[in-house]
Amino acid sequence: MSIKPIRTRFAPSPTGRMHIGNARSALYPFLLARRLGGTFILRIEDTDQKRFVPGAEQELIDGLHWLGIQFDEGPGIGGPYGPYRQTERREIYHEHAWKLVDSGHAFPCFCTSERLDKVRQEQMKNKQNPRYDGYCRSLSIDEARQRVANGEKYVIRFKMPKEGSITVTDHLRGSIVTENAALDDSVLMKSDGLPTYHLAAMVDDQLMQITHVIRGSEWLPSLPLHAHVIRAFGWDEPVFMHLSVFLKPSGKGKMSKREAAEAIKDGHSIFLNDMKDLGYTPEGVLNWIVLMGWGVADDDVMTLNQMVERFTIDSLTPSPAAINFQKLDHFNATHIRLFSTEDLAGRIKPYFTREGLNVNDDVLLKIVPLLRERLVTLDDCLGFGSFFFKDDVSPNPEDLIAKGLDAKQSAGIAQRAYEILLAQSDISHERCEPPLRAYVEESGLNANQVFGILRVATTGQKVSPPLFESMEIIGREKCLARIKQAIEILEKM
Image (spheres, rainbow, N blue to C red):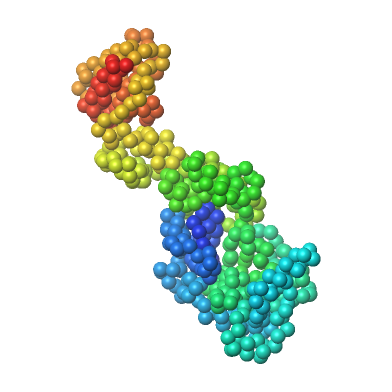
């Protein structure tokens, strides 16, 4: 028996911004295809024109590229089973919809929206589940075709069996049995000639030879209908997997738009473009996402290649996963520490230049080892390292006053430190640290007082990378000028 080559797909609708749910729905099928030497496809399901958002398709593609998830077939690169946008496959769906009509598995429905609304209202009044009442089910194919030929507006509905049940399998949940009587005569093709998801996705998965369908849990209730459609054509079903639900950080319910807006105020987001701007790395984001629904240790640090090596669909779990931004921060910081000096320098440079700073690449390479351990997100580099690329700094005068001392005493400490540094031929930390520590000992002051004044004077901030290493990179003349400025500020207070 021949084994089909693995073919998986990510099939988003361009109806909004790319978020972590989209990213995970792309990541798992990508990992499966790469793990088993298969093919990963991008298909754009854009038949819902009412919800279509211009630019959304490009955002999806850009998001995949940023994450390092490369598709083998899809828009822009083509492939043997294109086109890969559903609006370009209209005739294919039309043909398949009418095949179902001819085989008795579907029927044209000419009911107006007014009639359907009236039926629904009556059903709800009688405390019945709103559903199609079967008004056009018994029309003969000849009469239906004649009415279509006459230009009458119609949709095509699936003719759901009224008796018996259907058993379908979700790889994560096992067998699911549904009574056919509980299922509706769902619309497969709309009056505008475009298909619904229930037809288009099933046809495309068959024609594109998809072997595994990994998709969001919102499609689980539709699985019995989809199995009916597939079996009506006489096709083999792919392996279906419906991923776990993402819950908001509290673990209670899905995250709303309002809660997503609140999260970004705290420097977090569920949208990939935001995450990129906030300084998150694709490595950190992927590591965070992959573990929400994958039953391996939730603190495992992995690169994309390591994910490919370890991935198996048998380890996926249907259990809901709460969005934990603290874990995102943990993984992001961990991956930042794994980057080479050159790699990290290249990643943080745009954050400095975006602030209008003139970045010297030699200086940048020197400061990366000082910053690396302090960064949670890439944009943290601004708070810890902007002063390296400024001609001068503007310290808060109050910050220049050491704890337990006044402005005059602090000015005296700054003056003595200035004289000690002025006497040195260079400002390397090996040369400058010993005499300054000796001054601390003989003065009876504590190191926090002396070095705190020096830190604020030379960097302009109370928190910085290691002081003496920072001063060495800033340079002798610039440090002396900044300390002199601090003395002047203190003497005026």
